[in-house]
Image (tube, each protein chain N blue to C red):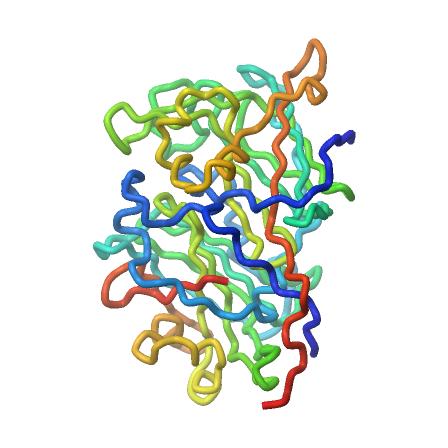
Length: 182
Length: 239
């Protein structure tokens, strides 16, 4: 391939909305992070994406990324789920472990997923976390510790049954999810 | 386990659109009302998904589908994916999706009164080369109406999805075409405050990218976040 562009410093390309027709990109298998043969403690993570009026966002794209277990040919660490008519997303994956927090006294972060939400009406994707942990691990998590105590629950999934974790994302309202600038 | 990677730089002011953009009506109930919480970049944000052509097969020529040539103006879209310091982002997956030449997406949920095209699905995927270069063959997408305001039309555009080296470099954007009169009327395009940043979303017509007697050519370079020059507090345990 011939390229003639110069290599010079520049500023980032602007984000634009994923829009309502991103489903051309959708491959439903991507919601299953075990599809390449990963083994381990299989869990499901699911929930709903809701707008400021409490209505389901039925055209959203939810992505998760987990740094643990380490990415490999059999474990992508990454998943994507379209929301359905009820605004519901769902993933099947391997339970993440704790990961280190550099520069914070070598503390450890509780098991979590990084979550990205794209949708019509979002010009820049929203970034948040979904913790899949309970008890002391949460209390000692350095990122969760930065969140106002009354809003921490918006980042913590509920264990509905063994291996079945649930977390809803609220764009606005009393239960508005804590979104990050990274 | 020690993380030695530098954190990604903050976005330069004005280069990214804000989600609270009333002129784009769908933002109303979907943008967060509370301030975003700035968190440090940990292993979660510094690392990110990586894709291989073996598991995610490329399709560079989307101007043909099952042997049927797409209707419309055949174009080559070519460019480089770089970071803010001009370094190529090599081996990175680039995906595009778009409407057909009549301005309709090949999706049941697109009800626009325009014909579908059996020669066009509208989805492509390639991986950048060592210089960060990518190249697609497609057709110029049509403009289409949308319900945002009276007689609203989206400018011709191609959607791009990129990941880059980390979770923090994720980018979904749209490439526009030079000279499109709808750009000045489009609240999505106009939502980015900085005029130079908006201008970078518009591809350049480039005679060198064309293929004579076959396809016109556009150049669209994409810049992802670069890394800070100074390392983060690696292994600082002096608490």
